[in-house]
Length: 428
Ligand code: CMC
Picture (cartoon, rainbow, N blue to C red):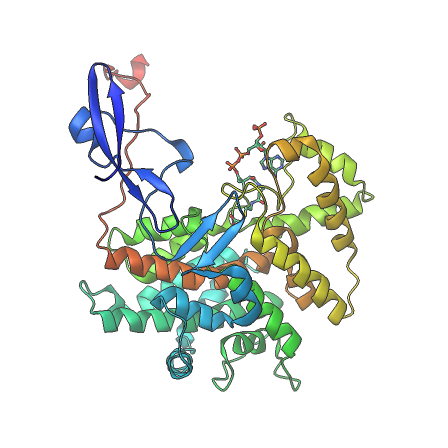
């Protein structure tokens, strides 16, 4: 007989089904609880609530395990290309040679964006944040692809929109960078693979010959793979919940980009470098800043530290730290903030405040130092996170549709005033 949980409220007992995932985690299914008992459950911030069943990404925060479709992040980061991982996340299997070639070819057919999209850049103030630009430009793609708004798209039609979005995202991201410099945009070269093409559009100049450096391509592939999915985090849950209203793919991803922007989520990579710079300019006294992070009367937090799920270590941070050392050495860069970051980590990992709260460096702690070494300005860091996360968002959106999930609509416990009499404005 399958396992159940019993919930006793007053003199009544309710039987609740227990469901088990393939990696052994268990959940109490409360979906019928309100119908049976009149009670809802309350879990602010969803700290203990599963919002869906998903076969895409598994993570074990206690053991520091992260797997995409059953493959460990360590193996994927070491051996795969970003586009291979995108295929894996979206279609569930690692592609065979021909499948990968077809996938790349299909994407390459859609790398151009409508020329009128460039007019948006005339409207953005020169100092506007790249994430604000990205979210609006990706939302605008729906307006440039009205066929994507048709209700009841076939699987083939949905797939076409997925190809378009994957292709155009990298062009849009590189154009945001070019426009921030006031430079002319560089058009895609479809002879290149996805990541090479992105770097080419970003760093090539019309005035010079440009050769994409393999070392840079490799580290960029690794970074994008490490960011490609992370189960039901804030932005991914946003993508699923927006998509559950039957909103189109572009609108759903644009909403996810906005969610990612926050400094407690993807915006942390920018915040980390800004913090490290501040510490450097303040004389590099890491003890002082650790003390500030611990002080409950000081709003300062050690950015790039802590995670809702990882309570042991973040496996992505381990890989990134090593990649950071490697790339700085290969490019012959000596970045003072890397030393500050290592010192902060060393001090924090021994400090009881951080140890007791299980706060470890997360994916964002070292990634910014790599982006900076590659030549990206700080404000572009979260945009790069979004580029990496795109296949995960798409896979999750597609899964939510395939599972025919109902519209996302949480309950609440109302704590406001009860009945009040309307008073005329002069009498208030
Ligand atoms: N510095 C100082 N104290 C911290 C930090 C930090 N970075 N993170 C958590 N704490 C403390 C927090 O004050 C609380 O202390 P107490 O129990 O005394 O009140 C305790 O640790 C638990 O923190 P929490 O905020 O309740 O934990 P959470 O699971 O709600 O938040 C987090 C997780 C990632 C938002 C948080 O750790 C944080 O703000 N970190 C800094 C921002 C950051 O690096 N974000 C990137 C996350 S990884 C990438 C991504 O998600 O995109």
